[in-house]
Amino acid sequence: MEIRALAHEMMPEIIEFRRDLHRHPEASLQEFRTTDRIAEELDKLGVSYRRLDPTGIIAEVKGAKPGKTVALRGDIDALSITEKTGLPFASENEGLMHACGHDSHAAMLLGAVKLINRVKDSFAGTVRFIFQPAEEIGEGAKLAIRQGALEGVDSIFGIHIAAQEPIGLISGKAGPSAAATDQFKITVKGSACHGAMPQTGVDAVVAGSALVMNLQTMVSREFAPVDPLVVTVGSFHSGTRWNIVAGEAVLEGTIRSFSREVHNALPGVVTRIAEETAATFRAQAEVEYHSITEVLISDPKMTDLAFGAANKVCDPSLVQRIDRLQMGGEDFAEYTAHAKAAFFTLGAGGEAPQHSDHFMIDESAFEIGIALYAQVALDALAD
Image (cartoon, rainbow, N blue to C red; front, side, top):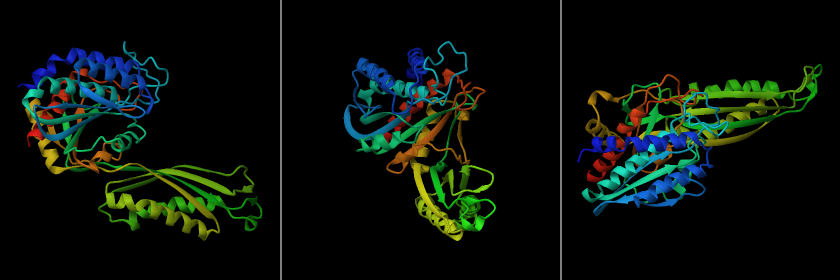
């Protein structure tokens, strides 16, 4: 059974499917047409599936005998970007674009469904395919898990297209790779007064400014130096007039971390620093803290298994282990907190980066992506 050859056979139909999705991008949790199109293709194959609420699909192909259950995930949502690529299949939905490659992920995962369904008599176990919505807002994986995506799953694997990387280059690493992504909003409440008589009020600007600096001490003094941490205050709004002491300030920002222990501790630490810093200046602080994604941690054994699968479906020179960490978030991380998992990137060429209005990729990379999805599933079932 030559997995790569089977993947090659279906490339024209997979490219056509991907271009259809690219023409009709949909925002997170609004992927209704995308879900319908995936369902249409599954119906043609006679593959069983169920819809997630409100969007997304979980499909399954069962082998000849009972066995393990291995899951494969591909996300399906687009971004709020106006496309400027000039492609003949460019977005027809104004203000929306598949600028991160999720149309490619959905297409490659559909290719894996077709391939696995074709060889289902040759393996024992079940392959589950998660066409996941809402990755861009960090809600889709959580939604899928709540609706049973990981029930009975022994392991799960994911692939993400990597623009600007050599076509077909498969990269991955065991352990943490993508940061936990958090968002915070801190409202500092003081008391407005005349700028010439600051002692009669409580200056929210001064308290907020001190808070910007004190939050950075988390990196240098609150957590171990070996635990990477980024604290960014991206927005600071306060005041209405040049000669008035501001009575309120609002700070918003993000924190990125690579340790689950640190990630779990962050809300309490931020709240303490905010409240106590504000109190120093006779002000008050209210904290809103949201965890968007977990830290993505690939299981060492599953990572090795996936590297083995990659070496079977492409030239080993295109398979690389990396050491670098990325501070960007990826909600596949939610699966890694509940099941043995591994996550890889697949180079697809192109000059523009992800999330660019000129984002373009080389579709020839899909053949390797389809083959890798299928091979890693089959190898995990047989492991």
